[in-house]
Image (tube, rainbow, N blue to C red; front, top):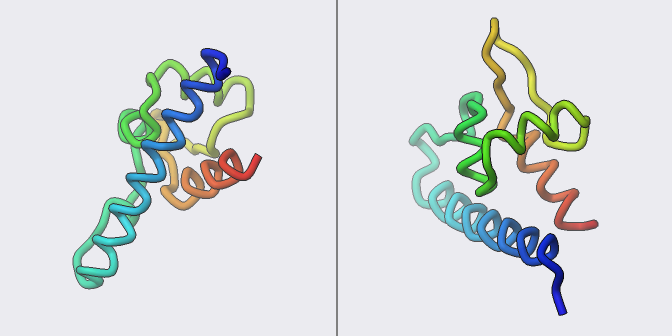
Length: 93
């Protein structure tokens, strides 16, 4: 039986897998068009991508366990490749 945390993690992984498959299909279909991975993501975009609250991202950053982020002025930004790499490591664990 899955515990609450396992259920949430499984749901996040399922959503992220679906997003990755959709993104790969779009990239194959339109190599010319600019995609979301061509620019930095905001905290809100990463939150939507992972299906988690923004507060969780800030907590993970404070604890040093989430995807790598950097500051652009006072704004927190994520490289999409870092978020995807972090997610793949979580999926492999």
